[in-house]
Length: 80
Image (cartoon, rainbow, N blue to C red; front, side, top):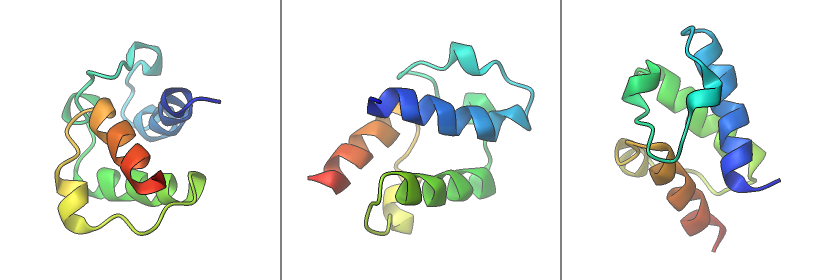
């Protein structure tokens, strides 16, 4: 499964609570537009760390996450 597909799956779980259409998530989708607040984003980061077996994502790194592509790029960086 590619990273975007897995991210879409993780985001779908998050946004289900927000009544957002997960099928419309693209790399350019802003996390803010999905209705994710800072607590939701923190929960997403924890899920991403676990799902992709990543080292801890710092608060500074988390604050840079604005779009789905930003999340994917961070995963790529952490996996390198």
